[in-house]
Image 1: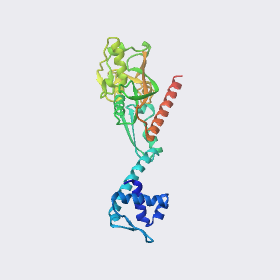
Image 2: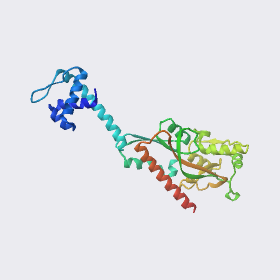
Image 3: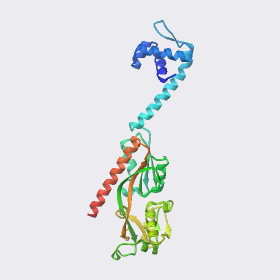
Image 4: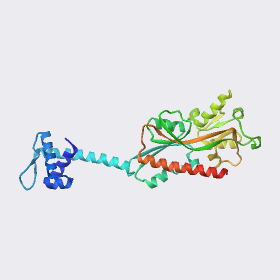
Amino acid sequence: MTIAQLRAFLAACDLGSFTAAAKQLHISQASMSELISRLEDEVGLTLFIRGGRRLVPTTAADELLVHARQAVTSCDNGINALNSISSLEGGVCTFGVLRNAGYYDLSDLVERFHSRYPKVKVRLVGLNSSLVAESVANGELEAGLVILPVDEPGLRIRPLFRDEVFYVSANRSPRRGPATVEELTRNKLVLYDAYAGWRDPTRMQLLERARHQGLTVEPDIEVEHVETALRLAATGAANTIVSRSILDSPSFPNNLKSVPFADPLYDTLALIQRESTVLSPAARKIVEIAEHSLVGRATESRANRT
């Protein structure tokens, strides 16, 4: 029993004529008769009494009718759902962003996407890059923005923007020149992204540099948000590190001073997705919006430095 047979059966019941049903389904009358005959052969029962001016459904047809309508309706609903996804008229878009997305002109990412595609539901997850990468790798998210490096295998990675990381202090004079990892390990340090800890990509880079010099990085204070770390640093309680995008933001404390590292340190922002998958139309659109914002941010950053 096929959906085509059930569609023909329903049309015949509704219109009372193979000719009218064939016209509605855009098939020949011969094809229409063939579909009904095959259906009757499969169920072993006569569905219509033929010969009069109008087809007369049999008791068997009356029994089948409600089930046929349910089957065809379910099939149509499934097709409509798939069409909605492909035409950006429905479905759900899942996307991961780095925790400090607001500093990269991404705070209104959902707003911009939703204004263009209001019928698509959005699930935007803001986590540390290591957790975003894990969620994309295991299929919980279609794609995401992260800071490199990430260790999850099976990801397609496309770098977009490199943001320099600075050493920040309320007391250290920039006249002393660039900072070193050795200096960082000697002073009190407050680091954010406490939950991710040493899985955080920026921390991973610091730790690797320290190990190369036989040193260890041990923060005196760990907090979750960069804003908290900056407030503590502004009191002189400890020093911290931030990217240039955070450094250039209007909310950056006025009394904090920043210096680059002697061996420059960078946060590289990248788009990730699983290697074996093709993004849905909705995911592709939100990726385009995010990429456009980051490219614009990179251009603005270069212009400001110039």
